[in-house]
Length: 231
Image (cartoon, rainbow, N blue to C red; front, side, top):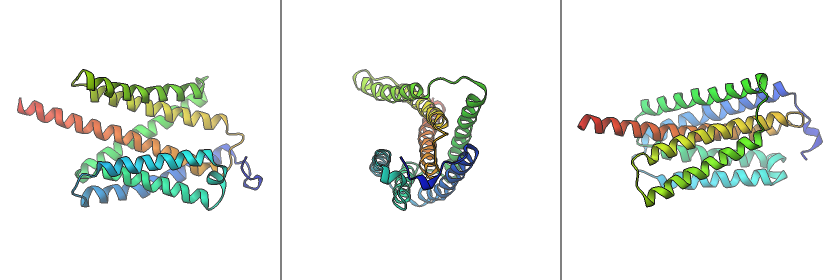
């Protein structure tokens, strides 16, 4: 358990502080993504994979270690490391993209992300929502389905493989985000102020994953449009 001197925080204050920290994450990341998309000229997808993998590894270690999760300043250092890896990783993924395109993708992703948070609020206040851990299991199953779709594509090629995988990926991320919010709400009687940092980063990570799916979808739509023009 966390240290007692951290104190249990009121639910409203917890939500406010979590969203405030998440907004800082987003406001800090957007200029970085813009600069990378403007000034980089070569593809570095391997950097994207390395950064994302590193961020997920550090995040896993945080969840497994009490010290990394609650001991200051170690928890801040770990979260900032996760944040930096995730932000730079996404930046290297959307590089070589026009600034206006990047801004559109960032804005559309934010609207979807905000809509999912609204759905969470609606479920909490108006529905006897499903068990959040079951939702998380469904989301994990969705990620496995994405891998299976790509594996099957190596056996039998299908032109809509990427479209199906993106649809399942986006749905899985949304379900995972909803389950994470509901799990946090179920444990709201024991959350403390230091938990806001970790939960805010997870919400930011959900935003990044949604952005990846939206960005790839945009590229797919643009490619189909170019093919139609040629025909």
